[in-house]
Each structure stands twice: as structure tokens, then as C-alpha cells.
Image 1: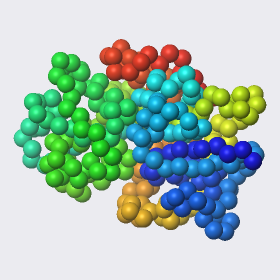
Image 2: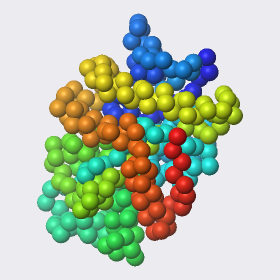
Image 3: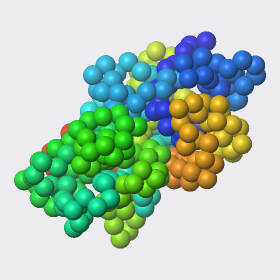
Length: 312
């Protein structure tokens, strides 16, 4: 059977979405022993090979190499790769009245007046990647305050940002994934929630992550393959949501080094945020949200013009 690489970030919502078509796998991507190691649904004659990697690594790989058949990316990355990839209708993450957060140490006087302190001379902000949607949203916000002041961004893996802010290696941190819910336990305070800022009065969703598929699957495996694979991915998301107990058991089995996954309430909250109706199908609302964000980014010179938002 033909194999397709399926790259995703190592956070809980991505892991949960794809186990039904990959089978329950170990951290190295190999299948677990027994029936759990086999797909739970019909994979349409394909074998899906999962690969967990930091989202900014996947962003860079999609831009610079573009070899992965299916991959998670940040929405910010799409305009750079649209010639090679199409967006799948399922698998996206959207901040619906919430989103990535900028945090600082409690009591830091530079941020007494809020987000404007991020533009003070010498202030450094740890970010999970310059091609992440979180960084695009933050850049748009800071340009509204003062477009002439550069952002002093320090790139690092998302899981290292809270500790870097705690230690004082950086002055502020831009948080994604589960860290959005746990920063207060580390003695940090929120300066801004970018999803709330972006949504404003009408609550427009902030596009964060996307799932994309190589356009040449139709050439390699026959006309209509992109659409067929997209449907299989949608069925995987549906199955994972509807079989909640199995999905949570999978997370616990993969939870080494992720103690937060043992906190059932936290996992429930996070998954309810980022495995939403728009994840199952972004539809016209998701496409319009992408147009708005990427159009604003292009107008500000922060990303290329996205052109048509091509969703399969």
C-alpha cells in the first residue's frame, strides 16, 4: 500500500486527531503492539506514517523543502507554500475568543501599562517561531501601537519559553499549546491574549494552525486523490472526537515528559479549545478568517499575499 507521511506538532490536539488513521504509536512513530497499533478506521488503501515535530521546524521544512505529503503548519506559513500545498478542510486550529498569550514575570514594572511595554528599548520576547501565526498576530498588534519600533524576538522551542521568562533570560514570552493554560503556576502574568485582541467586538476567530496536503498527490496516485485523502483525514478527526475515552488513553500512553497530560481537567479544557467545530470543518467561516489574517499580514508587509485560499 502506498505510504503518506503525516507530520504534526507534538501537542495533544494534533496527536489526538490522527491516531485513528495511524494506529496508536510510540514516541518514535512505531506502532504499539496488539490491535491498538492498527488504524481504527478505513484508510482508503493508504498507510499514514506519523511524524511529530515542533511546528516551526515543520514550517521551515514546508517552505525550504516541501517533501512531506501531509503536514501541520502555522497559518502564517501558508502564503509561502501555496504553490506546492493545499489546505485540508479539517485539522485546523482557531482561537475563538482566546489564543496565544504574551506573559511576563509578576511585578515587572515595565509592563505596568500593559502591552506597550513590549516595545520599550531592550525588551526581549521569546517566540516559538517567526513563521508562527502567534508571532504574526503579535507583530500586527505591536504595529498598531508603534510601527516604527522593532520587535526584539528571540526564537526558541515552545516548551522552553515559560522557563526562559522565569529565569529572566528574556523579558516576555509568547505562549502556544498547553502553556497558554499553565503559565500562572510558574508565577507569570498575562499581558495580552492575542485571540481576544484579534476577535475584538465580533469575536472573529484567529487562525493558528493548518493541515496541508501536497498538490501532486493527484499526479502520483490518480485524479481526485487530494480530495479522497482529505475526506479520510476528516473521518479521523470525527472518530477521535467521538471516541473520547480512547483518545485520552492514547495521550496518557504518550505522556512521558508531559505531566500536564495527567491533568484531566486541563486536557479537557485545551482540547475543547483547539479541537472545535472549525477543526472538523473550517468551512466558509474558516476561509474568511484566513483571508482576514493573511490579508492584514500582507498589507503590513509581514507575509506574501495569500491569493485564493485553496481548501480541499
